[in-house]
Length: 420
Picture (tube, rainbow, N blue to C red):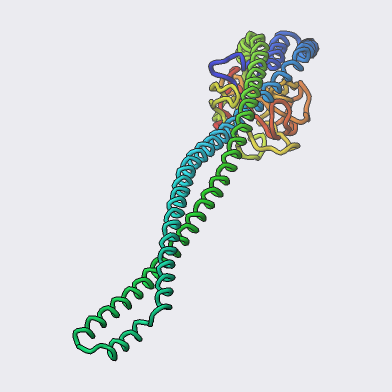
């Protein structure tokens, strides 16, 4: 349990019932034993009734604060995740938009390449047609005259002089060359046309691929935009939830603080009464304080004595005792000989038991057991060191069975560990 260093009103809740009980004890110590016991019982009952009158509101406020802060934390965590999703979706939209623009440029280039290839194809087809007409004309002329080879033989047998034969032979060779060139031109034109047709098909395929890629990217962009829209809606909703949770937490905190402010004077009175009780102790134990107390349970320490930050309100507060691991039902032992001066339920501490150990080296020492499931002794009982005074539990502001053990010296909490 935290007792705030800079918010003393939060201590009041932790010690309200203790103050009442010890006030009654101090009054009782100044009167006859029987009369004091009756008066203690009567006053304790009145204080108990007074505590119960406000206990439900205090307990609900405390529970409300815990629930509200849990909801606030959950809303903040969810909002953080939703904001991350929104950023990721918006990034995906931006990436898709950039890619869309790039694909649009690539598609334009691909279409231009296709148009150019188609133009080249038309030129190639025209060239092939020209060459094919030339071939047709050549075939027609050959049909009306002999072939170049036959003409060469004719020249050899019909010319009468070497000079005429040479001229005729040259004419025949020129005709053969023209025929060969026409055929070569047709072959080259067809090869170029085939290459152009291949380039046209590749350009057509490239355009189709760019279109498919653009369509897929468009679908991705629309999906990202829808995800971003939904993420934005969720962020907006969670902002509202966080705002409502924050308001609820603030309201619960203020309700707690209003109740705790009422208990501040009571807390101060507790301290005065404990100091006064210590001053009236006589005799007692003298010797080493180390080892004076028996560990109330064999379990290990789960939370030591000292200051730490409150998990909800964030202030530095005193954890005014030691938490021991103690499963529910674990017997709780008296740390020394003493008198049970009070046992009661308190909202924060649950079932409490206060054992007065008397004077130790001139100081009034008491020990407090908190969060008990049940008691094994009654108020006013004398107990011996090692006796079972109660059983561990998880009553009050507790999340699991354990023992919160406090040592009070002249009304102030001290670290219990050096006393064992």
